Length: 161
Image 1: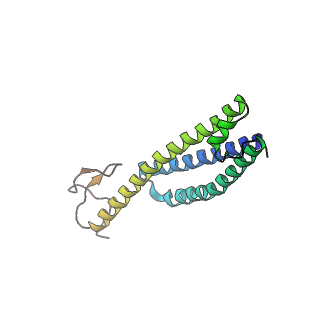
Image 2: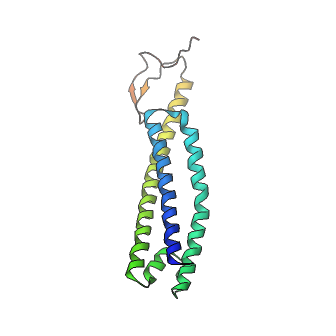
Image 3: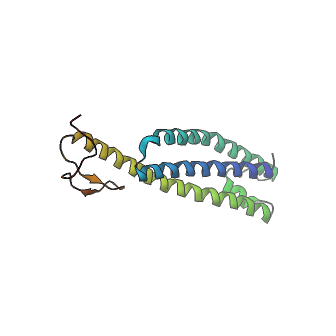
């Protein structure tokens, strides 16, 4: 095992996090535009990426421990500890860059996840209110789920079919 292998693995892990961020971003755009037809596919794609993360994390942890042993610091069991124990500034810089990038991606993923969950809850609520109000005017909603017009105007669903 070498530090180079660890660095390459960290790059692949970053790419996986970027893919997850992309999938969440696509889901967010679909939700924002009301194009919910493809939501099940985005959920499936997100779940596939999420399923691969534990294996990737375990591989990273194994590589970190192996590199720590090579560098003579067997007590370094996390990437942060390995960075602190790196034998050269170059490796500290490279590994720190990977860690900072992954932490940034994780923060973005967390924010987008919250936004998507909120929009999904809103879409569910609007759908439930629409179904419950068939025959009763329910109004129109904006992208955030707020009522923008009462139900006295035209309707999206024709209940006289």
